[in-house]
Amino acid sequence: MVPHPVNEAAPPFEMEDLHGHLISYLRVSITDRCNERCHYCMPEEEQDWLAREEVLSYEEILRTVRVAASLGVKKVRVTGGEPLTRRNMLWFIDQLCAIDGINDVGISTNGTLLGKMTKDGRTYAQALKEAGVRSVNISLDTLNRKAYQRTTGRDLLDAAVGGIDATREATIDKIKINTVLMRNRNENDLWDLVDFAHERDLLLRFIELMPVSTTEVLEDNQFFTVNDARKLLEFRLGELSFRPDFRTNGPARYYERKNGQLIGFIGAMSDFHFCETCNKLRLTCEGKLRPCLGSHMEFDLREVLRNPKMTDADIAGFFHEVVARKPKEHDFRNAYEPGRKMIAIGG
Ligand code: SAM
Ligand code: SF4
Image (cartoon, rainbow, N blue to C red; front, side):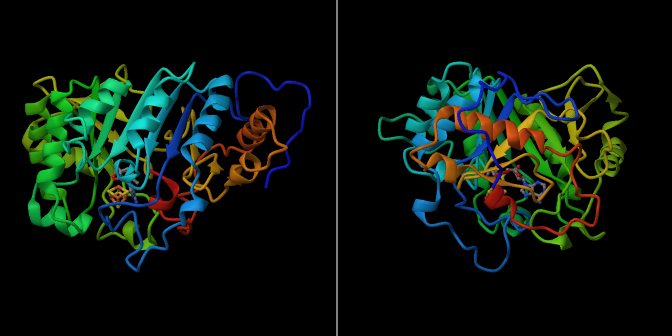
């Protein structure tokens, strides 16, 4: 538990850490549950799901985001687990999009529920768009049905592709496809994903595996660097030219194909500049504020939120204390032992 000032002078209205990172982005996990079972995200043994009372209520999350917005947070990405599995999530998204100062709300999803119909006859993708969601990141590691099933533990490739198409039909501004690179699993499927994204005019990003499930995911037979993936792609696509001028709000580096298609590479493990532009904090679904995905540090905001004596100023003080502890960079390269699983932290 971080010591936090109670009712002291008003804290500054922005959050800058000791390394010059200005925090403007909060990633909020709303559930640790999921309808898939990706091996790199969850333990193989049965997951210990959180009890309902341990998970922050929507009201608690909204209060936290309001305070964060008063401290300079402008962007929120809702994640999980699978965020579309939590009940009444559309109500929550509506409320979130209406918060003053939050001008960019995004969702990270496996896509399988985006094409599902709501009670009032819209797809979830359409309802999210109408609530004000501006970007949807959809995970898709392969277009091969067997490989999809092997990676996610579920035979839901058609639903995921249907969800991607529903999101395009809903005309959401930014749709990104995120593919985790896995040697011996999807290395032969990368070209198909590039074509799939090109045909649909979607931004595709390849992501290196991080040790947030089990250490085995980083063993040579699975780990595949973004540089190796890029070289492999160049065999068929021709040279990919680096586009340092093209940036989204994150650590991806973009390369351009001769036909103009941009492809992103997120080298969390191999890119030594990865953390330089970090502007992020994470809130886990049970209310732990984490200054960095790749550090075991996390601080219990739920205790503050559920203490009737604590005011919004106390929550703001708590944010400042956590930001002051944000590390310069992640610890993944330092013989990092996975602690909590990605599904429990929120990807
Ligand atoms: N269920 C949603 C989804 O799959 O997009 C949101 C949560 S998921 C934890 C968020 C992202 O984290 C996904 O793109 C997933 O591929 C990625 N992820 C999970 N475990 C990972 C790992 N060990 N290394 C790299 N990325 C990982
Ligand atoms: Fe579920 Fe997403 Fe984790 Fe896969 S990566 S198990 S879809 S939370």
